[in-house]
Length: 60
Image (cartoon, rainbow, N blue to C red; front, side, top):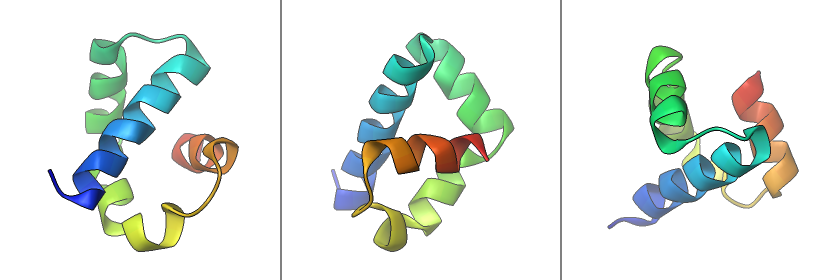
């Protein structure tokens, strides 16, 4: 898996834990709001930020 792919997995797990959701719920939300594409396209900018920033950024 690529670094960006690993980061997407990390974001999914961190978001799931922070929001008390299961994997299916996160997947549906990320698909509905195109979070997968956003995180992948911004990987270089956000992969060095902290977990709280990433979760807040996804919420926005």
